[in-house]
Image 1: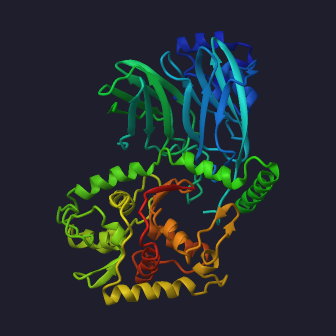
Image 2: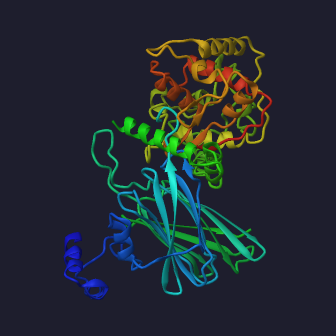
Image 3: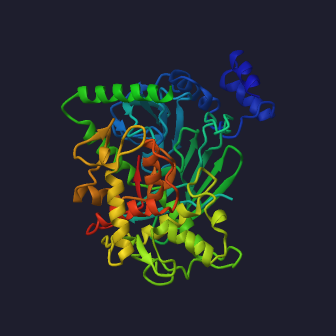
Length: 154
Length: 103
Length: 268
């Protein structure tokens, strides 16, 4: 299944062909990858962003990443993202050094504040990217979080 | 059968703050067990939160979200006494729905 | 290999953090990390399980824990943890919470001790009833002032044995509890170590267990804490609900007297 999708994408199909194949039931996304296509299985930030259609995301000071600069343990790193950009539709988190950078994506309907908080696993000190889709365009911000290990390693 | 979520929804000045704690292993599929075998990926991949039938948040997750996930968000228009319903679905197709009353 | 790589990363991180700048020290950032964690504690999930387990009829005698006496009378849970460990006449033994729970599993519910204590520390979906029960029972002592009495001769003995153990050096590293916890201002990598020989340190440490340990992904109890300290000191395995574990717990709990109990907490 994965193999089939990759072949299709490589053959220059792009979103259009993939959509047709999904509709025809020939290519079925594995559960959990449906919404963002292959983005969750991408291994680099640029690839994941491309899979999301966000490769031209402009840096924006209107995206606030609220997270401690040092996490005592990478298993649970609290991250909150607030977008001050008008018309925010989604907020997406990517962790550069993780094996698969795309961690989570939140859709913000009208009436919901563009401000979400969750906890992610970060394998090693890494930049964390927050992508915001606002009025159809992508914007991004990043922040470095250092991961340490306390105590005797337990 | 999965454990119930702990959902807290509090309204203040017209904004409802929702905090959700979910019980889930969120296995990445990269961990090995004591015998050296890979523990298969098992993680919540989709979340939907609704208020009176309207979606107030939806999300797509990968296994990098921490074990026993925590989620917090805010939406306008909910009143004390209304219900907020949260559903998760994982990559194995298991699903769980819980609700709370806004206080 | 894993540990060396992580240590290197930790040292680099610590070095980078310390060298970084005047605005925020590593201690301040770690304080922020801990504060952010406190917003949502997965221990709540264990508390819910524990409350259900307390009321659930089970075992060969099909009984719940509702007649279990934690020291304040059968079924009285509120405030019970703040007075443990204590001597129980029916067993003529000083018991901590987990030991007493095992006792009730055997006497009230009819389990064999070996079966009741088959899994004392949980792992993922292989849960430990002790951890769930402890989460709820200790939550019922939140805000209660620690009040471990040493009225009974055996309670007094347990305290004295615990104190002796605290300072006793042994194992291949010649460590004692006091080696890491006997002075102020010590740390292991970026983990600050509480000084358990001073009132403030003793109180803060004891009143924040059990805790959801992020690094474990589990709710861990005081029996686990001591067991893991022994492991890290390369001591022999500290047996669950042993007199030794209860003695050390009595020493540390008593030293926390006067502080408000504040667990289940959440820690790295």
